[in-house]
Image (cartoon, rainbow, N blue to C red; front, side):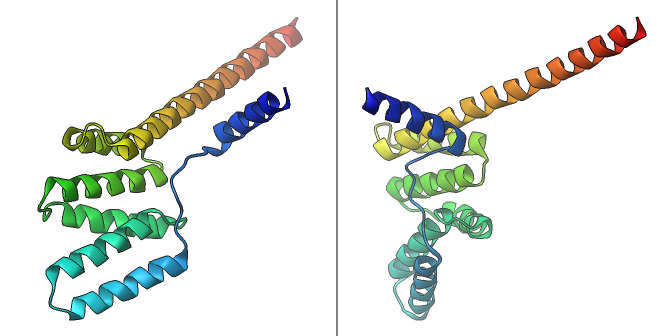
Length: 167
């Protein structure tokens, strides 16, 4: 019984906090990735540069700072047209979807995930994020309906009170 009560409170907490399973990235990891990109820029290997930029993009879109997330999105969008293989495109689309999810642009995130799943329909990571995004969209819809219903109730109550005073 106690386990069921704990599950109930966890689900209520997740409803209000938007509990997802996407990892966060700390600032020191981002700084390490930035150093790696700077070192790779001095090297000869384009593959090394590309890999270090992907790691930095990953770190940025998983950051808790909105400006880092926007920077990661911009980097990924700029590099998307230079993608060689379908696997690289899938990875970039997924990271873009994470970035847009973190920045609250859920419909854009869902569109990118659908493009990602066209490349790899059974990719569990993308399927899991898509479910999280769709749950968030549904939750925001429920909250919006609740706010609208409350506003209508308050307006109706105000009108009823005003009419009662006149009598």
